[in-house]
Image (cartoon, rainbow, N blue to C red; front, side, top):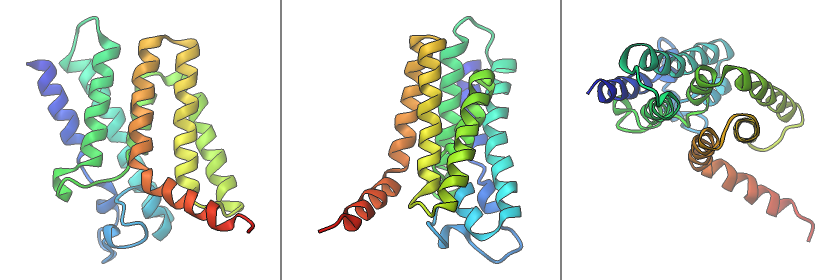
Length: 201
């Protein structure tokens, strides 16, 4: 029962819509501008300072949920498996928030918080790839730079875990990566559609 309670708490923490809260006082509903996605990348299109608030909140709830789960709700041996279950719970809460009629963001910042707690060493290696690709993509005016940077960093992280940690850890990381790819399906559809239209006749 403690484990179930921990997963429920993780889901509730994940469901706090920091992107929406970050826009309080502006009169802007982040769900009605840009991509309509209540997440860090969409807030970044409107306000960089408020995007930082959204990023800290979304990243922090991933960190807090897994830390609380491992610290207070679970004391067994299967830490990796249940840590990942908690990670999925907090990311699902973010993506399907009951406070937003079961809609939400795409889960990148929150899942990064999860990876930072479960595998801090490999996360610190993988996260800079996101920053580099995000900056380069913006400067070169890539289509969907956020999606490219986000998924690339998670694929890189999953590969690091597969090579240096273990197969079960890699399986969980791959599953999270596939879920994040699915959450970004519209971004990649836009990217592929643009690539097709730009091909020479």
